[in-house]
View 1 (spheres, one colour):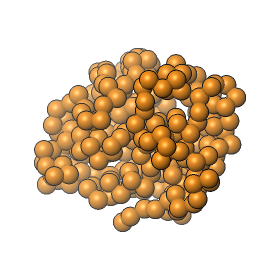
View 2 (cartoon, helix red, strand yellow):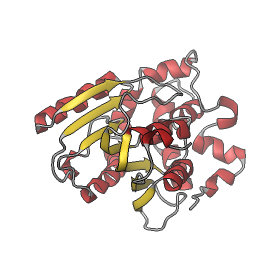
View 3 (cartoon, helix red, strand yellow):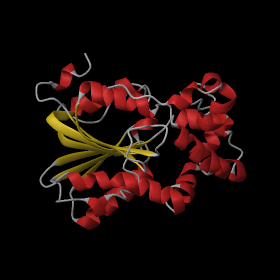
View 4 (cartoon, rainbow, N blue to C red):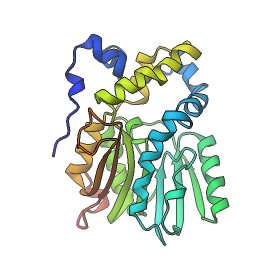
Length: 267
């Protein structure tokens, strides 16, 4: 099944304020750019101000509920981009081991401290923003991969997804949520909230950062997952209709086929 975000078909003067100027600035950050340099020193405050309180917190919380559908007891878990690990209130059971992977040491330390307080053994693995997508993990190491609001940051996504399949055992699952990036509702919501925050509090051009921070759209992620894995659960929020344009969050559980060896992923 192919998923489409029809907002992408709007004229450029309408899509640029909603999704950034992808044609002009591309999808890979220019690390010498002044806006990108400011962003690297600002994003912790940005997420705290826009994602962890008010409407942003409600939206994020809606995605975490997908974990109520999974028994974590005894599982070896990898979380890609754990952030503050805000989903633990929805856990059922306790995993055997929890591996945290992120490009940000502060996020890793925060998540590891939370797991320690819960009595869960964990390992921190710092990685780089790398187009190769290489994960610091062995073939078939994990029973479950968790990722909330992180897959949209990975580019090129098929390369990163190949790594996800590699480190997941046959029959293992990936669970999480993504923003309905590229959809009309998400674009309008960002235009009225986080885009305004950037304009008010920084000198950052949102048309650049939106492209560089969210290079991969929701339809691209869903197409990749549904093509190479078996869908177990898929739901949209706040509406029940399966539409990227009319929702803000997509929640999912997909399973790696039993017969797919780690090294054959996407070959």
